[in-house]
Image (cartoon, rainbow, N blue to C red; front, side, top):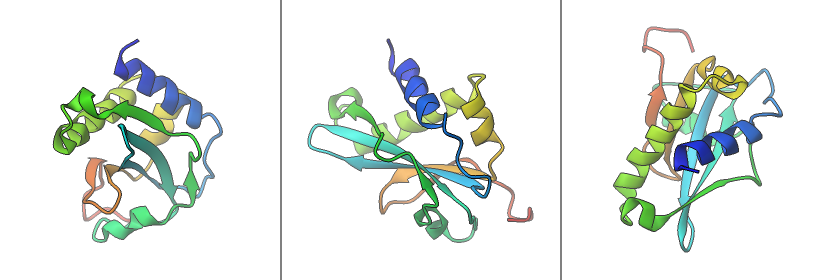
Length: 130
C-alpha cells in the first residue's frame, strides 16, 4: 500500500464520525515524534483569513488517532515533509468520498507544523464572508 492510500484510509476513518455542523474550517497539524511525523486533523468553528490563530480553536479533533509517517520518507527534511503532506491532503480531496466532500465544503483547509505558518490547501478570497 502506498502512502496516499494509507493516508486516505486513515483520513476517511477519522472523518466517519462527522464533525459538528458548526465546524467551518479544517487544519492538519504536523508534529515531530522521535522517529516520525505525526498528523492530526482539527476542525474550527471560527475562521479568519487575516488571523492564522483560527487554527488554534480546536472545536473538533481526530485525537487520539493520528497518521504517522517516518522521517526518512522525506529524507529527514521538514520542508519536504510539509510539501509531501500537502500533496497527500490534495490527493485525498481528489478521491470521491464522504470525507473529501466534507472537507471540500469547508471555508478553508490548511496544513502546517504546530506553532508554524499555515499552508492553505483551500482558502476563500479575502472579499468572501467568513
